[in-house]
Length: 619
Image 1 (tube, rainbow, N blue to C red):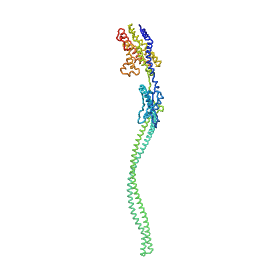
Image 2 (image 1 turned 30 degrees about the horizontal axis):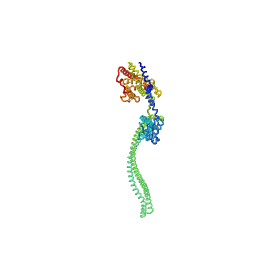
Image 3 (image 1 turned 60 degrees about the vertical axis):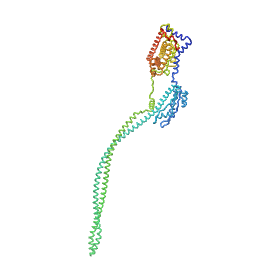
Image 4 (image 1 turned 30 degrees about the vertical axis):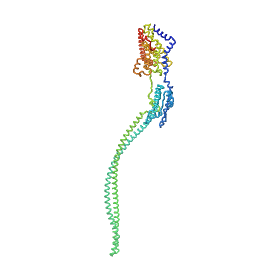
């Protein structure tokens, strides 16, 4: 009996009755039902998020108006944006309704903006800044993943609010910097004017210093001259006093002489009368008396004339004495004034010297002021130059960039179209194992009659493998049609995907065949255990590197992980050389399993074991 004949005989057995045909069709459909239904249910769950009911509660009281900002309620603004965005089926409800909705499974999660949400965001500009809070309420009794999705949604909300607040804060900061730059430019202009003024002041101070030096020299000369004048006026006062004293003595003598002469002149009439009487008494005649009196009148006239001259001279001497006294008094006053002037001149000379020194200090200070003003001007100009002079639209773009400085740009060597396409390689590989495992529930691994009639273990083994292998190929092709046509998953290399699925099914058939040949129904059970091990080690959902060390080691050995990787490379357009390596590993498993099965069949052709004589405990 040849291999095709053995395969045909097995197919005739499997289709001998209507129930057998139905059973065969049902088992062939197992991978399609398992893989197709699961991937259909999870084809693109993210696209269904707008149907997920979510409660949003706004208790935000808003922030009060300030001198710079109007009153705002950021909680309301964010809630309106969420509802308009439609990423979820948002429902604005009260806090009580949100809690009741979570308990009654009307909402998958709830997002609450507390009463101080806006105030907390505005507190960044105060002396007591604090973080604003967004409250996420979940109920894992409804769905654990709903809580995880809610956490991601709230994180996105937090990032959006932070970006919005950051953009506004950055815009305010950039506007302030722009204003500061304008002020710095004005200050630099003022500092430049100050520098020019300081330069002029230095020149003026230099000229003033020269004048002050000349003033100091002049006042020094004035001090010396007034000192000499004081000394001379003091000597003059002493001489004038002596002259005044001498003139006073002269005037006193002249007054006595004048008085005597006056008395003598006053006595002349009385003496004439006495002489006339005496002469008359002596009996002189009148002519003689007249002759004598004529002689006496001449003398009296001379006395009177001399008296007048004397009195005039006495008067002049008195005036001289009075004048010399006035001169002496004036000289004394002149001496005192000269001394005062000398003292004042000395003080003026000291003041002028101090003024000259002060102006020198002023000149030095003005020089430092000029230098400092120049440094200030240059510093302000440099500072203004370092601050950007951006127009309004550029500042708005800068604020937006500061608030969200990093844009995510993905570059994928190989990319799945959606969530379902991402899971397809794993569930296709798993469905292939389940399909082969189910087929071995009705397919006989080895024909006892062929073993008895033929002594060719290789042909018996190949026939036992090809029967489920061909049925498995049908399963995989049907599953591929569901994935590519019904579910619309994109296949970059369709032939490679089909080849991978058929190769995987053939490899699984060889492995389960070997288990059945060597262990019978126990081997069939071990096929189930091996499926469970590969279910957790294939790395179909999470990266295999996240597995515990023993399971990660199994990932490197068991075939399903290589099936998943190979199918990903063909389906997403990945590294085909890597797919070739995966195919090599599957070929090793396939050949090794067939060799082991053939050795088992060889043993069966020569020996009978206790297992062959006793019925199986597992059907």
